[in-house]
Length: 454
Image 1 (cartoon, one colour):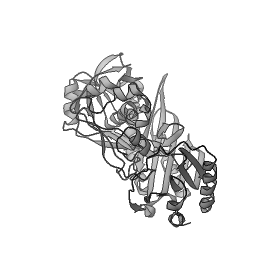
Image 2 (spheres, rainbow, N blue to C red):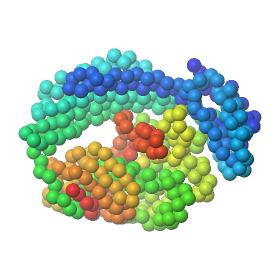
Image 3 (tube, helix red, strand yellow):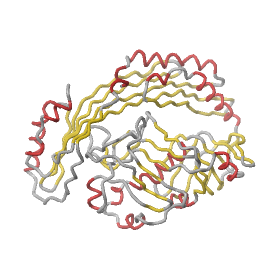
Image 4 (cartoon, rainbow, N blue to C red):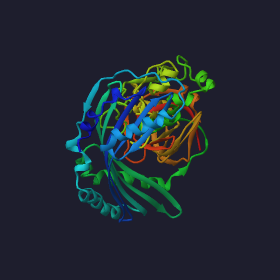
């Protein structure tokens, strides 16, 4: 089915309404999961659907459908519904014409082209590794991929298409030694299926390091100087600051607008935070958002100063700022709302070894289970290590890392030169019932002068 042709046949400019746009998506997802060597889940799911929205008589009207060959009729039904609505006046400022962009480029490497049996065989090939790992109580080997083609057209003339291709593999174990349990997982993200071959030595080395945590001591709660890995830097940036940068959270909230006034000093001088959807082959890739606004490099913090926030066309109009390319929907069943893409702290110039020296007798955090944020944030780490005399020392067990967002941003003493953008094919970001939306986050290793550890 030629989805681009379906859109070309729609004359949206002559629809009798203030504004209308149509988004068509074709997705193919597959996933499998082995638990203790047994295949307990194996799913392939191809879906084609469309989302239509129009603004008329001062209100939004939406429709989602899988009958993509009947879009003209779907639009007429929405127009009829809108005409029954009392006219409240047009309060929506029309978006700019952002051009015509067609960027379907990943079809030759699409995960949808790989036979499902070949994908499951990759998982099967790694199951025997469990026998080479000590203390295994539970093992899980999983895989998930997504290939998506997206097509868009609006009544102001903007058109785009692009495709998105990602997959993830994980090999996880719960280890047990007497009463001590430790759960960890090797993870691999890729945009090409061949990258999942020959991972045996990497998996075994990873799980060998995990064994050390069966004998680790629990941290003494308190405030510590800490070094965060790029992965932890990323989840901290996303949870503690990224959501606060989504402009819809401050709509109608004068206190929030005052607290997050542009130009305010909110972090240390060596801190710059960016959101940008142009990072190809990452899970945050979104070159044009679901309202037709091209992605750009958005500085949210520049050298410690609050310089921007993330917008849809609506939030930008209300706050008298510019759209940023961050109106995103999880899929064709949902309307676009303000969401992050790839959010990260920019790299500094300090080598990792120097960060450890400056930390002295602190703690290094390597990876995490989950995180949450707001005015305060919490991160539940997996691996943590004591820092002694400026060098990595023994593993330690930590339940949670927490702090105030404002205080922590100002307590960032140094940013490393080891930038990494962390992508993931399992899970994603959740907001307003839309979960999981693919995003990426990351940064360099960073040194924070004080954080609460328990």
